[in-house]
Image 1: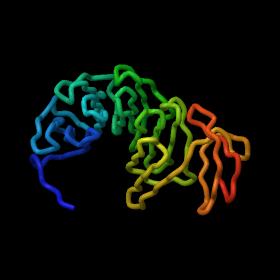
Image 2 (image 1 turned 180 degrees about the horizontal axis):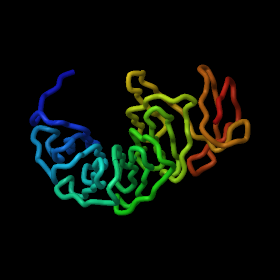
Image 3 (image 1 turned 45 degrees about the vertical axis):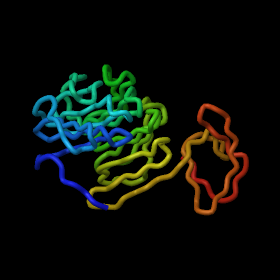
Image 4 (image 1 turned 120 degrees about the vertical axis):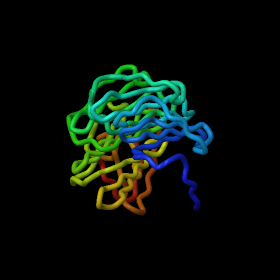
Length: 243
């Protein structure tokens, strides 16, 4: 409804927030990182001038990760007071974090996706080199989504170990976000529309194959929970699309 201008005019590039909104972090392209502990009323400059491209936060705001274009990826465990350089110089342009800050995913433009399970201390290259533009994570870090500029949307249900293309046409995907459980996604296309997806991951469909299933309007299902986050469809009325 209403907005208040804070700090100064800068080339702001990305922002992130703790779950309660009290701790904020923002990065300036060609400038510094700025943090706030009072919901943005006041800001403190951190680290050095770099080509900061992306930043993400844990739910409590204590663990942060930020990417530098043609530089390294940086992590903080003290709400941004101090930062540690990680991995190698790459075109880091997108980052996302689990709620506890332990599982991270980062994207390299014209490079690979990278995941970490130790709050950014070590990183593993995933999938293929693509023009990645954005990433998002579920709260537990198990379900990830990444979008490719003039490519497809990719999802992972194993914390980034494997990835699957989820669209049948190339678009200029520019940003993506995820619900806490990873079942609802929203993505935007540069000079295009907003796309939303609400889907469930099931252990087996009526066709006997596991994967993602979407339903047509009016479809009703009975599901049996089999454990380990998986369901089996026991009865169905309507149309399902499994892939």
